[in-house]
Image 1 (cartoon, rainbow, N blue to C red):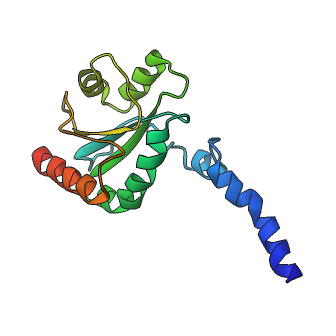
Image 2 (cartoon, rainbow, N blue to C red; image 1 turned 30 degrees about the vertical axis):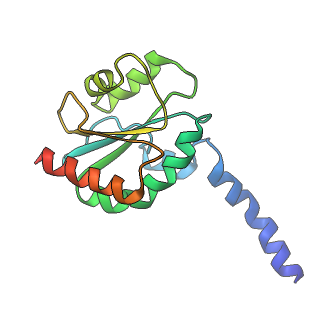
Length: 154
């Protein structure tokens, strides 16, 4: 029993580290952030853009739904990007969007009113989003919207 408790206590920093917002050494070692990519990958057909903030309750509901299907959808040509609005800095938000190649589409979709807790599906090279997902969207509906966006992207 003592060894089980000891093992659990020793693994606690690993579990807590996974929940923190600080970047991990693994992410830094790979040289790319999972939040904002500096360029769209060659095989990307659709960019799924999450407008995110640490304080956003809707983000906390939506994020696990997206994470659950991320690997499968990446194989089909969807690239996932998070634009951080935690500090409510619009200039920084749009700079992140520009780095991800979706600035024009996000400016059009948001129309000057940045809202967090949403996922916008933007075909590569498009100036507009073809679909939007929020916390009320079911995982099946999210997948359907992504498949539809992939079809529209060609």
